[in-house]
Length: 359
Image (cartoon, rainbow, N blue to C red; front, side, top):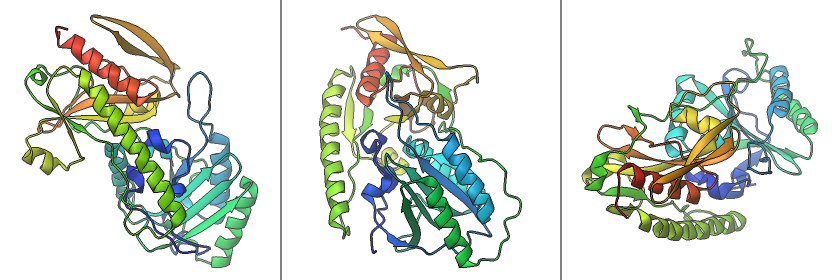
């Protein structure tokens, strides 16, 4: 089965991707070809499980599944040194680059995706190309899908044994090593907003569409077009919500650091999305093991706030401002919320109060 692996796959916004497997937006060469260095080099596992629905949308349970997966990998001779929740990988562009840097630093040579959906399990294994694409364009990938995890791992093990690779991985950890939130703070975390914003333009990145060029699969093309239609709606809503920002701002398409400097954009609005616990870790907040929930400060205009308590595993969004010269990050008060719209409204409201804007 021939396909196309989008170089923009991991730029997909988590808010839109939701619980859809990433494979809805990609295709590749689905084979039973085991990566040549699977039994001799390190692997990293990116996993996805359904969220838990309730009063809050929370990260789904994965420990039991991954214990079973890791036990099988040990038997196969697969040295899976990291297990990373896809939610955290896609928390932000900065987070994604930090995880990739870690993979390269630890000499990861194979990438494994395992996805649990409502009615099936899917597994992909391929050589890791060291970039945000993860899989080199045009590469074959081992692919298998079964209705239960036991059968998936049993059949995968059979194919690994059939490949008859020489085993070099002998010091495999007994339990899965879960990656927590990597820091995306490039310099200093500041829990305020700079007063210079009163006279400086804030650059606001639009949400990014996926490229439809060179997609040969009609099914994937339809998925990407549907995704892009949602991006258009989000950008319309973003423009509307930003009208309440009290100072000068400009909606821009995503730029590199060099492009931001050339265009004299000193401040950039960014966001991340993950569980409250992981989002705080990524922003260098201290998170104690005993903490089960966190308080978000919700602005009540013009000069009051209220507290909203959110469980640690609930999925939230947090906006912050990056200073593009010093690389400092300004987060203000902790005002993460359960939708990107609410989080943006919170950020604008709290910034307005902090800088004493007259209404």
